[in-house]
Each structure stands twice: as structure tokens, then as C-alpha cells.
Length: 438
Image (cartoon, rainbow, N blue to C red; front, side, top):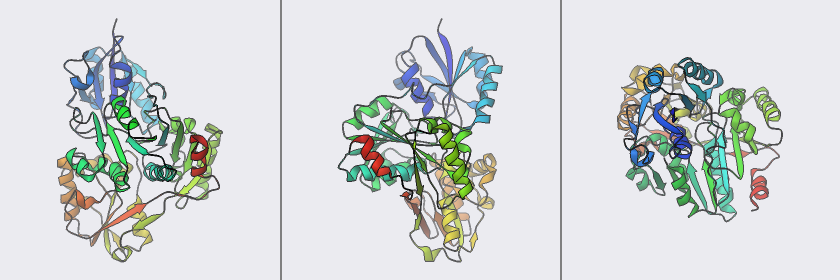
């Protein structure tokens, strides 16, 4: 009477859900994963070393485009949706597709797969990709460190390489990033913490990761990905909202879930949004979660060389996921270009190489920006070739990493930085002290 299950995912939440709920449960047999959003995941297998003794051959991973065929071929009875930052409309389109194919469509409860820690956990999540989790995480980590706490960061998974080798990874130095052959997307999340002397854990098996993190931490800081819910049960759940996409906090999954669960809602980008946008987010927060504290914040920009921007032809490189499935039409580099008087934003589209052509076909809204896509060696090569082919005077890099550590650039690079600045009456530091007893 074993129930045949397929897990729809994007190389992260899907593996965690399997590990926590399905790996050792004889009632279910996971016959396949499907993959989307992340290049080059389909066609592989979730390895037997991670899948456990019930799956000696591992579990195949198919492209989500094959979903209907896999349901029919494998006799799938339940499909578990297990990825994030999709609109409610697209979520229900997936549900219709699954139920039309004859399977039940399952959404797991947010707390069903949360692991319990022996140490206090602060979770930083968001309502959309690109809302400002990274600077909020850094702000909270610095506040906890200033209070004398050992802070260890556990990052939402990005296991795009050898999954067995990535079971539980520890990053403390740039050498660790090189040892683990990190993608650009991984480096964007790990480097800012390493720069500040903090240890970061990530990988595939978050129970093993938690054991290792607890051994080094007074406080575990969950650094969320996209708009996913935490993998660890939080003692304080901080959720970042983006008024530049006002209304998305109620129309994206898991964004609304996070907003409903939050202890603290940080309304970021107050310096960029209109009062009407801010009021929309505030009204939705009050309606969905009136018990949450609301903190107002900005993300002021800094650049390494403002004079190098003024009047110049600029190529703007932005954080990849923010532009792609985050659907933001611009990022920090564009804001900096406008603020510091760039003469022209050079359109990279005539010069795209290889995989970047496909990226722009999939996300045509990107326009005259260049996402820092680097999920593997081929994409990194294509990014380097594209950057060097664009006839710009300067590259304005809005990605959190030093892009020159990853690609060789034939023109000057100006980096854009941004940190969280709390501007409202409510204080994140006061909330941390009250909730965690600092």
C-alpha cells in the first residue's frame, strides 16, 4: 500500500522535505524529483548516499517539463510542491496540471519540516527574492556579535554541484569557497559573512548541518533563500518586505506564509519607495499579521569610486536571482548609475554569449542589465565573455561579491555596496534584546 510520491523542486527545499519527511517513512516511496529555476539540475540523480538504504539506486531528477509524463509512467499518486518564489497564479497552474494528470497536489505545512535546535535560532526570510535579506542578516549578525554572542550563519541550500560532497559544508575563508568550487550564486551569499569573520554552513542535509553549527554557536542565524520558510524552528522570525513590489507579499508563495508567521516585519527600501507603496505593504501586514512588530529601514548605497561613474558608458551587473525569478526590473547597480551620473547604460543583449542568450529568452524583462549568472563553469565562462565584449567604459557591479575574483574583466570595475539602516521608531536591536534575553 506504499504511496508513490513525486517532489517538485529546484535543488533545495525539495531535498530538505525528502530528508525530513520521506526518506525513512515506509508509507511513501519517492519515485522522482522534478527540477526548475536552476540550470543543469535535471538529468541527475539524488544520490543513494543521501537518499538512504530504502533507495539504493538514488532517485532520478527530471525536468519539470516532463512532469505529466513522469506522473503517468511512474503511477504517481501525490505530487509535493517544494520550491519558492512563485506567484499564486503559477502555483495554482501547477496544481491544475498535477490534478489533471491524476495525482493529488500537496503543500506541506510550514512547520512540518522545521528542525529544532538546542540553541536560539533567529530566522531572516522575505516575501520575495531580492527584498533585502542579506543586509538584514548582516545587521542582525553584527548586533548579536556586539552583544557578545558567537553567531554562526546557516544558509538556505544552493547545492548545484556534487551533492554527496555538499552534504554539509563549512565556509570560513575564501580558500573554502575555492575548495568547494562555489558558484557565483553561492559566493554572493557566503562572501559578505566571511568578510566579517563569520562562519557559514550550507549543503543538503540540514540535520547534520545543524549539529555542526550548534557546536560553534551561541545563536544560529538562519539566512533564508528566495521567499522560502525556515528549515529551523525560529525563536525570532524576521521577514523582509519590499515596497518596490508592493502587493507581492500577498500574491507569492511562500511570501504570504512568511508574512503571516513573522514576529518582525522589516519594510525595507524606504528611501526608494513611494509613500503609497509603503502604505500598501503596511496595510497588508496589519491585515495578515497584526501581532508582528513593524520595523522601517533603508538600504543606502555606497560605491568604491563615484568619480569613475559620472558621464561614463556603464555596464550594470546585478544579482542574478533577483532579476530572474525575483522579476525585479533593476537592482543596486542601476540605482547607483542614476545616482552618480552615469552617461549611458550600455545594453548587453547584442553581445550575449552562450547560456546568457537562454537566460534573456526566459526573462525578457531584464532589458539593459546583466545578471551575474554563474551556476557552473560554462555559465561563468559565458558571463566573462559577455562582460568583456560589451563596449562600456566601466562595469558597475551590484552583486555582493568581488566579481573579479571569479572572472577576468578587461575594463574598470566599480563595486556597489548596501547595508541596512533602521529609520523608524521600532528598533531591531531592542527586539533582539527583548526576545533573546541579550
